[in-house]
Each structure stands twice: as C-alpha cells, then as structure tokens.
Length: 116
Length: 115
Image (cartoon, rainbow over the protein chains, first blue to last red):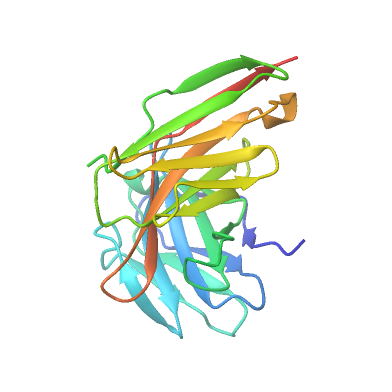
C-alpha cells in the first residue's frame, strides 16, 4: 500500500537553529499538508499546499515557517530559528483529491522535533 | 477553541462487544467528518468518513452515525477486537477560503479492547 514517508523520525536541535523536515507524499497525490501535535494536545493544521503554492495556512504558520516542493517528489517544512515551543510531532499528509473522495488523507509516521 | 470535542479520553470494552466513540462539534460550516486511528509512534490512519448529507456510513465492522441537528457523531465498532486498541481521533472538515481543506481534530479517545 502506498505510504507517505517522513524523515528523519526524530530530530533534536538547539534553540535558534533552522530545521528542515522532509516528506515524500504518495506519487499521484495532488494536495499536501503539514500538521503538528504538541505532546498531550490536539493534532493541529499548519498548512496546505496545492499546485506549487500554499492554499491555506493557520495562524501558527507564521514567518518562521516555510514549505517547498523542490523537486516534484519531496515536500519540505522549514522552521527558521526554532523555539522551545516548536517541540512537537510533525505530520505530513497527502491526498489525491479534496474531500468527498471518501479516503481522507494519508499521513506519514511523523517527525518528532525536540528543541533544546 | 474546541470546535471538535471528544469528551471521553478513554474507553475500555471487552472483546466481541460494541465500542462506541463519541464526538461533538460546534461549527455549522463543517460538512465532512472523518475518524482516524493512531498507534503510538505512527501517523493517524484513516478509518471512515461521512458527508453531512448522510446520517450513516458503514464499512465492515465500522459504522459512523451523524446527527446534524445535535452536531454529534459517533463511531461504532462491532465486534471489537484487541487489535482495535488505539487512540481514535474525530476530525471535521470545511472548505477554506483558499479552496483547500483543513481538518480540525478532537483530542482523541484511547480505546482499550480487553481479550
């Protein structure tokens, strides 16, 4: 079964450093997303991406964050100048179509980001 | 801002019995609802969805019921199996201004099915 692949599975970084979280969505999917889950809290929407541009972003997704699809297969989330409160599980997801497909998103296994 | 609420943090049932997981929402703009299952150290896995134009959707052992007037949905698992033990997330969707979609998740309910 096709999978969304995320690397690394765990990233530890010092406060103020930049990190890049990588994702390989399912190949025929057109819509890409990043979500995050701070420990003990809800899964939260960060950003959606379609046709090589951001289609929606949450209030969490400020200038510190950026996304890119550099080569047609990878989908990256960059966090500049990380803060302690950025520590969370970051999930990439992709979907073939907008809702109504009945299949929901396919999520990756996540990258656990720890900012120290 | 709790637009999607799962008021039971945990639920324990016996193998073979029915599991009922509940979810309430407040935003009338939501028109598509999904249930995801999550094991530790894995991403959420899509289980079943329902459009707001329906009140029931069934897929094998899983049935989702939607009561729009009460803004309530539930997931029924019959019969429950030990392998169903996981955290179950309810999620709601509305089309965004940008024509995209974002999911709003509940906090999850941890289901334990005892052999």
